Each structure stands twice: as C-alpha cells, then as structure tokens.
Image (cartoon, rainbow, N blue to C red):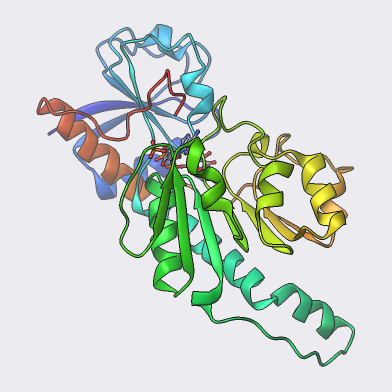
Length: 311
Ligand code: NDP
Ligand code: OXD
C-alpha cells in the first residue's frame, strides 16, 4: 500500500533514509521536513530529534515512528497531540546489535577478559579460572523487545539466565520474576546484572546501593538502558568496597560524558559512547512499512508507547 511518510529530524541524513526506503519499502513516499514544507494531509512521521514545530505543521498526523526504542522524551512532550500514537522502534537491526553488545560484555565479565588484557600488558602469565556458563547467574532487567531477545541469546549461550519485568511472562529456559515484590528474588546472588529498562519515574535511579547489595560479591553491572537509572555515587562506592568488581556503561546521565567525569579514567569501568544499538535504516524501513500497512488495513499498531506508563 502506498503512503506518504515525513522524516523530521535535525540530525538524520534524508538521502540515507530515502535510499533505505527505496530498497526496502519502495511503496513509501518519504517526504523531507524542511520547516517550510506543507505537511498537511500526511498521517505518518518518523523522527529521533524532531524539527521544531513539526507537530503544528502536521495537523493530520496519526502515528509518530520514533527511530529508537527509548521514548522517554516523546511521552513527556506535551506538544505531541494526544491522539497521535507514539510508536517505539522494534526491528531486527536494533535488536541484533543489542544482543551482540550484551553478549560481548557478559562474556568479557564471565571470562575475565579485562584482567587478561592487563596481565598481557604487564607480561604476566596468570592462572585464570571461570565457572561453566550454567553456573554463571546473569539477570536482565526489562523484558521488552530488547530484553527478551537478549535473555534468549544469553540462555542459548548456556548462562543461568533470569529476567525481571513489570508484568509476568513466560520465556522458555529463563527464570522470570515480575513486579517490585519479586525484585529482590530476581537480584539475589546475580553475578552479572544487565539493565534494559526504559527510563520512567519508577526506574530513575533504580541501579543503586540497595540493588548492588543483593548481588553476589564481585558482581558486574552492564547498563544499556538509560544513564539516569544509575546512581553514580552508589556505583563508585560499590566498586570501592568490592561489592561490584566492574561495570560496562553505554548510557550516562549527561551525554556526551563530560571529559572530567571520573568514569573515563576508572579501570573498573568500561565506557562506550551510547552505541550499544542503533536502528538500521533498511530493516527499519521495512518495519515501518509493515506498521503503516497494518494501520491502513484498520489493525492496531504494534509497540505503541503508553504515555501514562511512560514507555
Ligand atoms: P520495551 O518498552 O519493549 O520494554 C520495556 C521492558 O521494561 C518491559 O518488559 C517492561 O515490563 C519493563 N519495565 C518497565 N518498567 C518497569 C518497572 N518499573 N519494573 C520492571 N520492569 C519494567 O523496551 P525495549 O526492550 O525496546 O528497550 C528497552 C530500553 O533499552 C529502551 O527504553 C532504551 O532506554 C534502551 N535502549 C538503549 C539503547 C542503547 O544503545 N544503549 C538502544 C535501544 C534501547 P512489561 O513487559 O511488564 O511492560
Ligand atoms: C534507543 C537508543 O533508545 O538508541 O533506541 O538509545
């Protein structure tokens, strides 16, 4: 089905997205929002960093396709009319990149890769041991599109995998806990904790001393959710006390991470500049096309954010 879709973004390359749509979803007519464009009559828009005033220029907007999975800025944006559905990105490129990042970091912590690298630099031949993966307790906070996929990958690599979400669910081979009342059972004795939660009032500051104290001594934290979920002072205290041995952080309260921030120079912390996963233009184009087809056929859109819940 043919449809017009606006790309309204201050950073994205229109040419790159147009190329992706021509390849993966040629039926979609991609329109570039240039501020002065007449966008009346167009029902669909995609964005990560919207052009100022785009919602005023799109009086017929029905669905806003966000080019990422974390929609905290959009659900808080009161200039988006209430009838517009905010759609989270869920597409294979974004999911696989996240699976790769988390698996990479879990294996780094599981096999003590950073100790090995340090030993190599010092010319030390060390006796490094590690448990079987099924004896390594790994937990994923947040079992949405990315959390479920990641938990399944960790399980398939043999790790003793747990998951935690707001509502109960069943994932074969993964021990799932739900709700705040089961959080401590989920955390109890975990050796590697992965955060894939959305940023909401409930999850702000959730990675704190109370959580770290429940983990096994010497555990590792991998935060790929949002920086504001981490209490930075609590992380440094836990690292100093040995309760945590290491952290892999991809997201930060202030991004870019300021040059003077202590995380940059802390050998126990591995910093990546918010690159764990990005939407792939070609697979995203196909996913957006499928959603538009659903909507045009009168079906419900998938992955719609709930503004009240905040994700
Ligand atoms: P989803 O919205 O699909 O899933 C969110 C999950 O978190 C759901 O399982 C939800 O529970 C759970 N959850 C939400 N609030 C709570 C809570 N208070 N207590 C327990 N569980 C809760 O999101 P995605 O999986 O697509 O993405 C997750 C996050 O990953 C994004 O919001 C973003 O912040 C981050 N991200 C980071 C990237 C990076 O490059 N670092 C790239 C992409 C995303 P329920 O299932 O019950 O609704
Ligand atoms: C996202 C991100 O939310 O890249 O998609 O952080």
